[in-house]
Length: 228
Image (cartoon, rainbow, N blue to C red):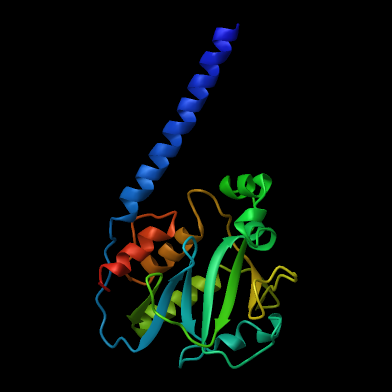
């Protein structure tokens, strides 16, 4: 009986190890494969890809001839209620992670399992900035009007609405004075992470992107190549 139990434990651990190994190997391999993307002229718009070392956001100018983001997201949803920022940073992710896990030290096993297996709800997190500084985790991208319209469309399609307005999540879990959360469509999982969402947004806009990513490294890899 005890030998059978040890055999069961051994094969269970082996299965877990192999699953994790295959997942990580697949992510590493697919994240280095660059998808086909278009070459555009008249690159009159400037955006950024920004990572905090784990999670990526797309950073856009607040105002352009295409959209004024303050007319879409109410600046009064932030604690500061300022309306004079220059950039808006937008990221998609698991609602539980966003609202219940301000730091990794506060991560609960239940939150991780719900998110990992796609059982939770999603949220869009926006943050306003006065300026964006390029560094090893932040890359500037010049894009065309057509590409910017595609990015706007993807962001809008990711949200839930009430009376044609994005649904603000009333919470005290803001990361600072200048951010807010909104109800989003979909669910986070180990196969569709926050970085997968960013990568898919770039793909749809015919910008450099990876075949598939779960982590931020693959996205940053695509832009490190063109920003040596």
